[in-house]
Length: 338
Image (cartoon, rainbow, N blue to C red):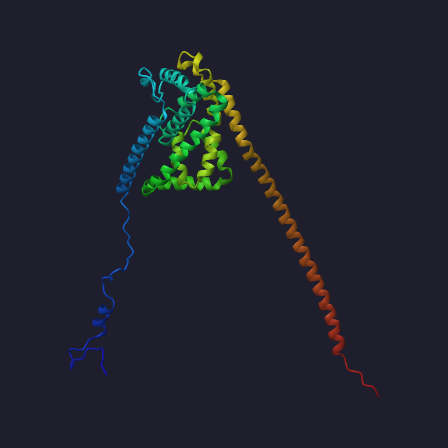
């Protein structure tokens, strides 16, 4: 019989300490996976996200250029310099005259170019969206431009939402950003039932900038459907102001005629905020009444339970007394007949 213990007589025999390393090698076999504890390189992830963002922007710019090149009608030589994203009042006036010139001849092409340009600006949070809303009111009137602009803003902001959802997780590798997003996510989850009202108020308020809301929402637990709905409803009041201004653009002589800041606009937006917050207040009021009613019902149920337990105890004590009487009678001397 072989022994695993080394002996002086047999120096070639193996001990258990010699065999154990052979049974459990220090290096894993081929195909074996070992858990890694290395943390991802934050700088590398952020650099890759920025590189992908640049590629998406270049590709989107090419799509915008191709759409305008295919959809726009052939412009006259003197009209080509007027075709640009408006960034001033004069450029807005020039573009308004250009679109009205070709609106009746190529109505659908103008709409396609307007929508694609609006989506591009909103997806990358570029300036010029306000001028496009004003331009829409000038070209098509408030009744048509209002729903068109609201849908363009909501859809373009949703594209920004999707871009942030795809590339934003690189920022979550930074502890500072992750801690902030976690705190915001907790607050939103606590007010989840009032989330749409909260987002609508954020859209109406001047702070924070709308692009911040677009970037943060996918990382704090807000779905894209409530995000789109809240964006379309939240931008409604501001778009009414912009398209109404556009309706009188032909009679304006300078940007001072816009009257963006006025008591009429302020009261209108305030009325929208109050209307949005009314359901929140009613929900809070009824929730408090329901909680008070539940507390009263709990107290009544406890009182009924106490009464039932008391009756049960009294009934059981009566039965015990009856049983005691029976025991006393049975314990007496037996009667013997003679």
